[in-house]
Structures are given as structure tokens and as C-alpha cells.
Image (cartoon, rainbow, N blue to C red):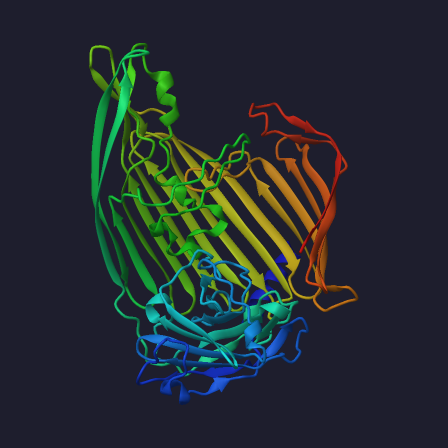
Length: 610
């Protein structure tokens, strides 16, 4: 432990050292904004461009086959980008159409990437294909979609991309003089050439450390970010109700709902989201999944309210938004607890969300803060006896959900964070509380890093509905790992411990408790052409896990995997895995004390992609 403590202290102290000098791009303030049409009007004639691009692929550090020029400007409302991708064969520029955010279209691609907080850990990525298709994301939130403008035009000199990114689409520090981390890239699809303005070594763990800096932007403020969306919805259902095998009558049911969504930008950095009596009937429904395993099916979040601040609330899998508004916990029990002759008149399949509020953002010094609260209503099944008398069965109690996150970004690769989730239920039902402290720390040159977290779960079970006494069940899990994150050869070791009483299921993702997991790996990467291979990697991984109480092996597997892109740009994948000993799965039987015995095995895999 003394060695580990000393290592952590060394990594933390290294962040006090200054970064090496980086490239600089100067943005120019415009009095008259350009028209976004892919044509260089008079506004751009006064803006100096950057042209010193460097090839990243296929020859790292080489001279690009075609020159590129990028100009950046701004005014009180937006940032503007004008890029000319010169090409001596404009008729060969690939420009396949596709949907927004499609990955890997058969088309040339241009990107404008900014890190407004200049902490080199997160960024906004705005890209456009030569066909005009937009693609945007946030490094910490792949679902990010903003409202911005772009236009492209293929000319006799190549192709042009023009962008307008309003300040309402991004978050930046509240200060007069802005300095943003900055990168811009170009991809020539037909030759697979990838050019960058600021070259990022392929062996780098954090490419943002090598980005340049965008300067010249000053005295800007975001516009008022306020939206109010009221709504009214109604549902009418007419369905047959059978009195016996041949006789039936039609019954009608009618329901309605009204509410509102509010989004307000408190300042340049923080956003307040509120929803009152939401109706998610217009949201894309989930695909049906038949799951026969003990693992839980994880669904994507399609409700826009829950997507703001995803980078903060998604830490350590402690906040699964689909727990809110889920199927009532006793929904499937109702048919088995009613009396003979009774019938189910109504049994709602979704918990009603009464209201929710969320505050998220990041301060000037990189401190991310997220606060979330939601309240769901009591849910009842309505039961009717043969005499027409009705009664109700509680299927889900009134519940309050709370989440608090604080995340301090340190320079380059490191951060410290804390998250707490809390679930309080009425009607004397179980409450829950989970708290976690975590970190990632790297040295100044981002060669080595250590990661870790410690999580404590508390489950409060009321012993008597008429008393205030609770039984508090404690559980915990922790993780610690050390790894080499830079260079052609990378490796690491880690340990995870999950106690038998650990439970984060009330608001978090499913996790297997009562486990001890160890992992070690070594990966060799090559990024320069060698004989028939353009690039690739080979990795060896050893995974070992055991039951925390019996100490019987659950997994002991060694695997070797390889991947390579050939000079022809075809790809090959392959490897093998071996489990040389008998292992014991205590979860698949789903009966306490029973287990599946998994015999030793050997598996080979190989496939290619053209």
C-alpha cells in the first residue's frame, strides 16, 4: 500500500507542471456574419487560414497528398468555420448520402473539434461529409445532437465545407478571454488518408494533449436558452370483452394527459431541465427482446429529458434512467394474488412520472455538478369481484429518486469524482442509498495511470409497517488498477471486489455480487506499415474471478487476440481462448446453493472484412 500511495501522490503532483507549447489558431471577430452556403464571400477574405496540416495515416508525420485550409471566425452569436479541401481529382471525391451521425459513409469527411474548457478531457465534435450529411457528438456523450448549420460544395479545386455553430449548442467558461482546445481534421475516403492540423501520435493515451489552442475569441455570452413545450395528449381504446367463448361486447377506455417540458440555461455553463406530468407516448418504443439469461436486458434511453448531462450521470453504472417510469415491481404478481372469481379491470404497465428536475453543467475550473430529482406516483391494479365490487392492489408506491454527482477534471487525463444515488419509497417499502468515490490519475506525460473507486450500498428494510425501525443492509465493492497507457506496448493489472450484500439495482445497472475479479493484459500495437500489414495489434489477456464466499473459480480464461489492416485495406481478426480448469457458475441455476459446473474448453476464432 505504501508503494501505491506514493505512486498516486507522484501522479497528482505531476499535474502542477506546465504543458509543452502547442499550435495556435487565431479566430477573427466578424461584423457581418457569412451566409452558410459553401461559397467564400467577402467576410472570409479578411480571415487568415491555417494550412500546416500533417498526415496521420497512412504515414504518421508525412506530408499530406492534398493541401487543406481552414478559417475560423466568430461574432456575438456563433463560431463560423470555412474549410477548403483541395483535390486535383474533384470528380473522384466520394460523397455517399446517409442519415445524420452515420458512421463510415463512403464519403470524404471534415471535422471541427473544440474543448471550450481547455482541460483536454472532453470536446464537441462537429463534422460534415462531402455529401452534406452532418455528424456531431460529445466525447463523453455519443448521443449528443446540437442545432447547427453547415453547407458543402464540390468545386473544380476540391470541396468546401462551411459551418455555423451557435453558442447555444455548446458550453464554455464564463470569462472575457476564451482559450479553447482545438483540432481539425480531414479524411480522404478513396485513399484512406487522414490528415490533422495538430498531429496526435498513435501511441498517445490522450490525443487531446497534443491539440492546439483556439484563441482570439473574447467577450462572448450565450443567448437566452429558454424553451417551454406544453402538450396535451389523449388516448381512446376500443376492444372486445368476452363474456364466454362466443359472446362478447365492446368496451371503450379513454384517458388524457397534459403537462410541460422546460429547459433554461442559467448561464453559459449550467442548464436546468424540468418536466411536469410528462407523456412519453411519442418516444420510440423498445424492440422486444426475449432474454432467458439471469442478466438484465439494457435498453437505450429515448426520452430527451434524461439525455442532458449524460457525461456526469453515467459514471460507474449507478444511474440507469430506465428505472424511472419502469414497469411496476408487482405488475406481474397481480394475476396470482387475486381471489377466485375476481378479474383484473386495470393494471398499468408503466409507472407514472409526476415531475422531474435536473441541473447539470461545469464550472470555469472544470468542476462538473449534476443534481437530479424525480417523483413517481402510486400505481394500483383495479380488481372487480363477481358482484361488481372493486378494490385496488398497490403495484408500486410513491417514490422519490435523487442523484448527486460532482466531477473534478484535472489536467489532461485525470479526474476525481463522487456520485450518490438515493431512492425513497412510501408505504413502508424498502429504501436504498449508494455512494461512490472514484478517480483516474496519470503522470504528466500520460505514460502511466491508475484508476479506482469504492462504492457503498445501503438497503433499508422496514421491520414493522407500524414502526420507524429499519434493518440497514450494507454492501460494498471496490476496484483498483494500474496500467501503461502510452506507447506501442501497453499493459495493466486490476482487481475488483464485490461483497455478497452489495446491491445497486434500485437505481443502477444490474451487477453480479459476491465476486472477486482479477485481470492482466499486454497489448502490442503497430501503427506503421510492415510488409503486408498497414497497422494492427496483438493482445494477451488473463481473466480470473471467484466466488467471494466459497472461493471457487467462476472464470479462469487466457485469450490471445489479433487485428490487422492489410495494405489493401482489408481487415483480418482472430484469436483463441482457453479455460483450462473447471469453473462454477452460481448464478445461472438461480437457486441459492446450486451451481453450474463449466468444464475446460478451447475456442478459436478467425474472420476477415473487405
